Length: 113
Ligand code: 5GP
Ligand code: ZN
Image (tube, rainbow, N blue to C red; front, side):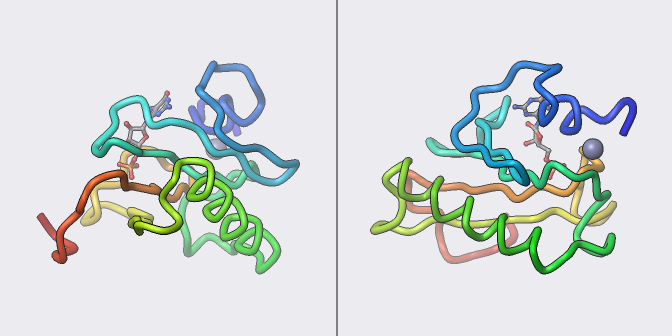
């Protein structure tokens, strides 16, 4: 999609620190990390958010990628958090479906800061 930052990263038109990539999904370091590990897992096909007709195959690719990222970053044994901000109340700023993988420090029990 034109003028979508994450479509451009997925196409290699904007640089990113890529952690994992397949034909369907790309995972890269967040530009403004909120935790010692902060990776974005992004389906390459443009969807605005999780309510936008995301296929089961795409979601399976995302889950697989989250596992690969967690193992690569040493999070698999200690735990981590996955967040998909969806729409205005969640503060979604990039309108291309993405999953934040956060970890590398105790994140606390609360979901809302
Ligand atoms: P949201 O608030 O939409 O859930 O999260 C968007 C995330 O994308 C933010 O954490 C922000 O730091 C990250 N981000 C925005 N633009 C870029 C970019 O050009 N490159 C990378 N690597 N991350 C970005
Ligand atoms: Zn996009």
